[in-house]
Length: 227
Image (cartoon, rainbow, N blue to C red; front, side, top):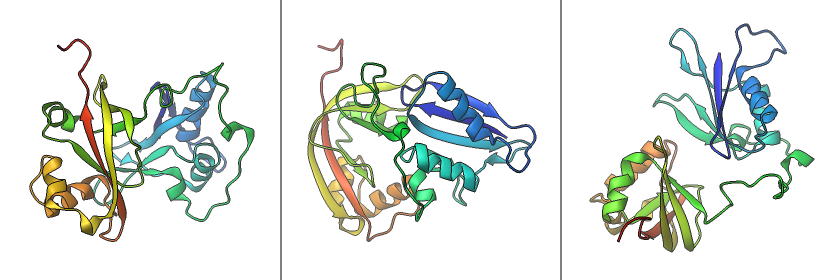
């Protein structure tokens, strides 16, 4: 088994488990240990994969408890019948006991500056949306359990390297998935509300018509170096 974890500052760390036994170090815990040993304190995302073409492998129960105890907001990539998807660690343990050790308290800003909080809030996008956002074809984004607030924002496109566009969030509307409109779809570069709902299922496979989403309207500011 191999695992990779992305820290809050975007550094990547890896871990490997060559022989598993009861109580042994899962690859995810090895990767987290490597991250901690090299100064990482907050994590964004973690994934494990198996050999012989097994692909993405979900975390065991102990790993899930560790994630929830120390990194409840880390996104965990898990296998599903529709392909890999990411979920919050807390969603893997819906009725778990929560505790707040010192390690979960706020970090000392004199020792560590979290890139997420060092500047305007971040809104993350798949890189396929970059050109539509730049051209103005896409001026809205619909999010589930991923809130935004009015004011300055950073639109981060998760390409390699990342692209960051300065922007302004000009509107946030809460509505049910079933209440999304054709106008919402057109603002996202689509045509109909049905098409928008289908696109959302690609990001949130378990999304239901009765779930509440945030419809976020934004405009991009001039990029550095442009007239």
